[in-house]
Image 1 (cartoon, rainbow, N blue to C red):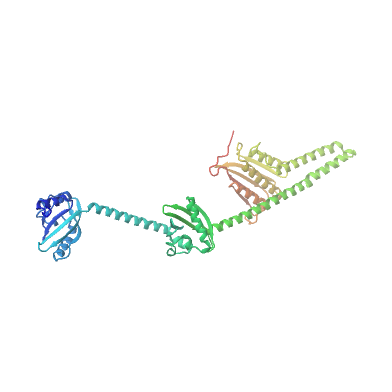
Image 2: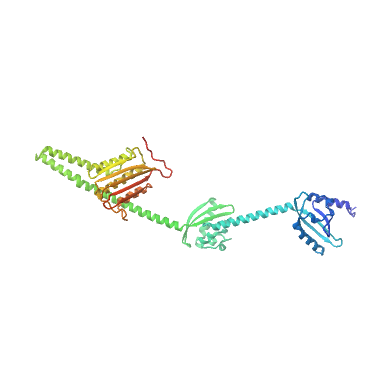
Length: 475
């Protein structure tokens, strides 16, 4: 029983049970035999293919290669594995992988073929995917090489996986020197521990870290931003040496400006004290001395008593006016009680009372309420300008106008004094103080003057800034 050979019928059943094509082809390519798998794989029954040339099912592009292979097989070369494409009965394409060989004694080709269409499709998808990945990687590398920031990619072991051109330029370390090495290995020995600790800290915090550091080797300031990525760390850095120098310059200028302002404040205070002394000595003291003389004359009954008392009363009233004006000049307005237009009015009335100037006041801001800092600044700037006019201008009249235009407060002060060259580079402390006050509120002061043509000061201060609420105008 065990030595009994299987019958032909059993062998045919065996062939028809498998999912691979088993066929016999003659020297001209005719199918002599083919199993039932041809129906499963191609849609043709065996009886439809027996006697047909295999080339009739084959894609035209593959015919020459298969024909050449047949020629080689008939010369006695070893059996080959090869691939070609067949057109199924429904018109679709099947990619076949064949194994077989030519038997010279029979003058026939014995072959088995399996459908690898799905496998080929997956291979193509994988190939396309790999191509896309490669292209995306190339695009990313090109992008990273174009940015002006240095970029360094690190894996989970802190080894450098990417080092762009900007990193080469900034650090003066080539990509070839950096790739594959631990980050701190490519740094100077004195800085290695610092970079190693920074890497450990970033990994421990598990969040982005920003820092600024100075490189002694490069003599540069660097801004470094480190981010956690899926494969390790991404490090972006840029040279901020110029920015740092500018910051230092601005800080120096700010300090110098503050020193100038402090000096100006001290000088202004000294000038105020000197002014008070002069006013009291030159005006009030002289008047009181005269009143004292008139009083002594009255006591000794020398002269006309009524006339002396009347003159004394007039002189005392003048002294009261002088002291009131001096007090107004030295004190800030009562901001909690009055509006801007009233505090300006009081200042002007106090100066008009001295009879040194005639000031005309025009305002279009009757009901305007402004923040305290703006109120004080406008009051002090106007006070400073009127004081300058009294001291230096030899003016007889001054026009003061306060208006609102496009959410900006505008103050104009014009006098008919002797004027000066407003284009000269040197400016007095008083003018510097006014300009500084205006700048502190994002405002601006322009002074226009010429010799013998008076002087005009234009002050503009915005009343809306950076989304703040507009000042109120109440009825």
